[in-house]
Structures are given as C-alpha cells and as structure tokens.
Length: 490
Image (tube, rainbow, N blue to C red; front, side):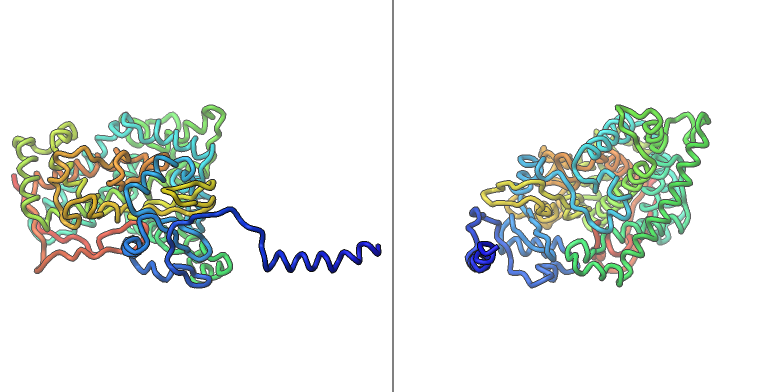
C-alpha cells in the first residue's frame, strides 16, 4: 500500500510531462489548407455555389487541398491528376461514402446504390444494377418508352401553335414519365407526385449541420430539416409500398407495359423471390434502389438536356449546324430514330460540351477514404471525406482552350468521352462509384434533342439574352425555365 501511495506523485508528474511534451507522432505531410475558424472550419467560405468557391480557393491553395467542414476534414480535388489518383490509382481506398444525415433518412439507412458504404452489400446491389437493371440490353428494351414520351412532348409543342411554351416543364415531365414507366410500369402524373420529387431533390441539396458538427446536431432539428426529410421519406415510402403491392398482386398477369417486358420493380421482385446467390433482397432495399433511380434518372437527365438546349438557343450557329446534320440524316421522315443517333457526331459533341460547361453534379457524390494513403506526395488520413470538383476540372484553362466558351467542335476530332475513362470530363464520375446509368440518360437526351431540332425552329420568348442563373443544390439547375415559341418545320 505504501509503495502505491509513493507512486501516485510519480504518475501525476509523468502525466503532466506527457501533456506538455507529447510523444512524437509520425511525420505527416497534409495537403495545403486555407485558415479555418473554430467549430465551423471553412464552412463560411463555401457560400451559395460551393463548386465556384472551391474553384477560387484552389487557385490559391492548389489542385489538391484540405479544408474542414466543421470537424470533418475534406479533401478537394480540382485537377485531372488529382481526380485520376482518387478515381483510378487509389479507387479502392476512396470507394466508400460518408454517412450523411439527410441521405441516410431518405435512402433507408443508405441501402441504395449511390450512398451505400463500400462493402459486400454495395457490391451486390451494384452488380444487380449493372447486369440487370441498367445493362445495354435492358436499356435498349425500353426504346418504345422513350419514343412514346418523346412523341407526346412533340405533340404538346405542336399544339402550342407558336405561342409561348414552357419547354423546361415539358422536359421535366418527359424524364419523369420515362423513369416512371421504366421503373414502375406506368406514369404517375399529377402535381402531388411532381411536388414529392421536387422536395426530395431539394432536401438532397440541403446542408446538414449535424453531419459536420455533431455537437450542433440540434440545429437540424430546430430548423425543421430533419422533420422535412422524415416527411418526404414517409410519403415516398407509402407511395412505393403501393407500387410494390400492385406488382406483387399482378404476379402472373400481363405487366403494365404489356408484352414489351418487365419494369424494374418486376426485376427486383424476381431477385427477391429467387434469392440469387444467397443474397436476400429485402423490401426496404428494393425501395431504396427505386428512390435512387428516380433521383439519378430524372434530375440529372432533365438538367443536362435543359442546359444543352439553352446553349443552342444562345449560339445560333451551333443550332444551325446541328439542324443541318439531323435534316441530312432524317431525309424528310417523320422523326429521327435511335438507329440514327450514332450517325450524328455533332449532336454528340453538343451534348458533351453542355455536360462540360454545366456538370449536373458539380462536386459529384462525396467519397470517403477507408485507410491512410499517399496522394501526389501528400498524406491523406483514413476517414477523410473527398470532393472531386468535376465542374472546375471541366473549365480548367490548362486543359481546355477557351474553357468558358460553348464550342461543340472541340469534341469532333477528339476521343474524350463522358464515360469515366477521361478525367478531364467527369459528369458521371469514374471508377467503382461511377454512375451505372450513363447509357440510360444519354439515350433519352440524344433522342429528344435530335427530334426537337429536327421538327421545330425554336426562338426565345422575351427580350434580351437568356438568363443563365443557376439554382443551389446537389444538382445545378437553370434557375428560370426556358420559354420558347416553336414553329413546326414540316
């Protein structure tokens, strides 16, 4: 006992010494960082357009910098080299996702494809998506849906008879209807459903204080953010429960799309019944994947198509060149078919250039490192969140000539594509976490744009230049709708 009492002062002295003179840590070389404030870190510097703010910061601190959003270290990549290191060289290290408050509530505790953490579950659902939901064969099987909805939109424009027409609204309706029919078997039109989708996308673009400053998690509750997320989640859940019940009860009956094949809920329910490879697809998993298809399939598809049309209306010579190309291929027929699309290089160049200037998700979906790694000479710690500023890379003057100009011609004699193999153009990401629905989105965009230009002469309604203001959020929309007058060409 006496020996123990004598040792107490020694232990206290040792504790004080180690407090003032901590044991040396291994040398770390973090990326350059801007000064940060207590508690909030660099949050105050992001403003309403984080992709633009981070581009400006990268000019001062370099193409690979470390910022702090609250207590969370966030690596920001703004160059081809840094993006390639993250999405190719060290793709496995950066293949996971952070657990963010709002996506977790909306996607059934991140049981979807986009936000689920890297691991066996993600591998299984990604495999289902790539091989069965969004394979080239499956995408091609829904050509009749794309054609039907495209023709319905063309008829609406025709009926406007040259009067002012809200083209943006029609594009939203078209993409929603295509995804509804492909995923759910039929359309769900009406203001209520449209409003639900709008609220869902708005929430995904909201900043959750609790995700970055745990001690201030109560702010999300006080602001009503958590309540709104839970309300939208509950409404979508009730809607999807009804959809799944319809499909289960229709087992053995001709599907909503008739003899033209299964919809994606049918495919997922089939996996659930067959218990493929011992992987049991639960009901909440099916719902999470369907919500994923809506968020990725409607919003980004509509956005990229809308921006492409905006740029064509602002650049008459590009519009004229695209019209010349589609008229030559169309040869007076009633429409441009999907078989014709590979014969339209300028059309593809227009869409690539629109995706370059207006990357739908400017910062892509956040990643998270799963282990310590060396990146371009810097030490990156496990648990660091990662943002790839695809928007900034697509406007890098060291990569692109006249990067702020709309010039589709730059892609005519270039192998650069948007499929994740060229790191100067990353609208859909790359590597393991690249978007599996690229072909689905592009088939819609190319078919609609080709026929719109083939069938109509479009003119802006109103005086002055088009307002190119952007909205804030995870997806960058055009702030104001496109109002046009359309004259049928034949």
